[in-house]
Length: 72
Image (tube, rainbow, N blue to C red; front, top):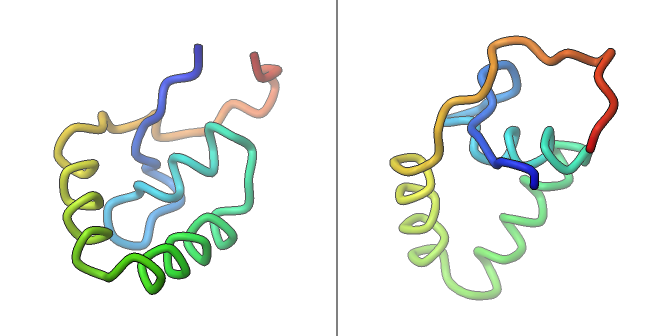
């Protein structure tokens, strides 16, 4: 099972979306853009609350990404 963590290498504020992108092998910009669209569609306040809660409960990830390891 994959563990979600906050990215230490690809972060703008807290590394939430960068960490999600690293775990699922997605483009971090795409994850951030999707979050903006969800925030606009559902209201910005729920997105901010979710982001702050994730910032508090998600652990920090590794400082370097080991690209030699295969996912899984």
